[in-house]
Structures are given as structure tokens and as C-alpha cells.
Image (cartoon, each protein chain N blue to C red):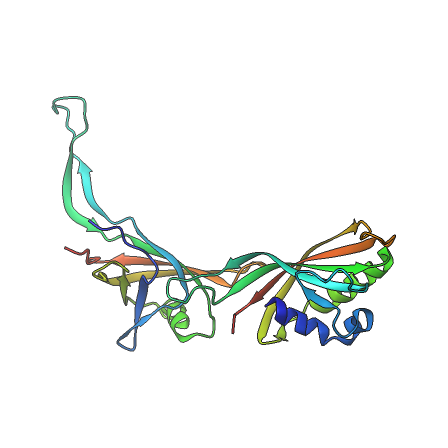
Length: 135
Length: 138
């Protein structure tokens, strides 16, 4: 689903206008990746299992989407663009179909400069839960 | 004596004379089955303890179940139909033990409720009031 979420986000022009055609990464981005960009990762899952069905036929994934920028304002603008798109989204996402997205929270942080650079990385993290029936 | 798993256990409802599995069950309980007694303690009963005798009757108890609810699904609609048009109904409870034990049941009353929660699937809870013999395996 993470790669499907990446596909969905990269299909949105307000997002690619900020991060470029490939600026969404699953897990982490390479050190030399220019800011701003997005990373997505899974922190938990809930499997809605039944006595009769196959395991995992209805799932809820807990995700963190990190919006990373050169300034706090840049990271916040990117995070808000993603939040506005995802908060009520349901429909196709890559090979999957999202049933519902729940935005649980948002917080900011700062990553120290990478060796040889003075540029800090400003991060705004969106905490989401995503419900879907795996295809 | 074996310890059995639960996945694969089922409840079936007779719909148009065909036992049909109720889909999306999360779990169910059969509770309250009991043999009935009355207090037979008299003024001349010897000793401190109460005396009891059997009435000769037993109660089959009830079954409560929780499921992910599909309002558009025929099997779930058949359950609420029993409330819209009250009628006794034929059910079957089956276990996932080695012998796939089943119990054939007669239900005289049905309760139904739904739960809607933001971070969960649409759920329903049902309660079936059993009558007659609950068909315990022997």
C-alpha cells in the first residue's frame, strides 16, 4: 500500500508542483535528495479479521507522512497540501482502493544539518490511518 | 480431550429452507443454558445447607454474536427480517473442532443493534433467544 500511496500522491499536481515528479519516497530518501520532498512509512496496522474470512481482508494502516523542507514554512505548506488532499480521500490508489483516510495528528520537528552542510531539514509529520480492502 | 481453534466456527440461519452461513462473524457466545431447580429446604431439614430439587425443566439459554454488518447483504437482512416479521427461526451453530460439531437450534426471539465508530468497520450485535433442545453433542 505504501507504494500505492506514493503513486496516488505523485498523481496530484498541487503536490508535484512542490516536490517535483518523483519527490515522494517510501521509507526514506537518499542523502542527496533535494528539499522539499515527502516520505511515507507505516507504523502499525489493525487487521479486521472474521471467523469466516481470509486474514487481512479489511485492514487499517497507521502511517506517517513526513513533509520535509528547507524552511518551516516550506514544510508546513507541503504538509498542508498533502493533508487537504488526503483527509477526505477515498478511491483508487495505485493497485489498491482506499476506503477511508483518518487524519489523527500533525507535529513539527527539525533534523540537524547533514555533514558538510548548514541546511537544517524542517519536518512536518502527518499521522494518518488508512482503511482499505486489499485487492 | 483436544483444545480447538475457533477460526472457521459459524452460525447458519435457515433462509428459504436452506441453512445459510452468516458472513463476517467476529465472535459468538452461547450462554445461560441451565437445568432448573427449586429450593426444597424445609423447617425440619437437617444440617445448615439449603436443599434443592430439579424441576425437570431446562433453559436452552441464548446466543450473542458480533459481526461486521453489511446492510445490503441478504443473510444479514434475513436476521433483521425476523424482527420486522416476528417468527421462530431455525439456526445452526458449528465449531471448528476436529469433528466439526454442529448444534441445530430453534430461536424464538432476536435482538439486533449496530455500532458505528470512526476507526472501525460497521458492526452489528445480535442476540438469539433459544427455545427447546439446544442439541448439545452427546
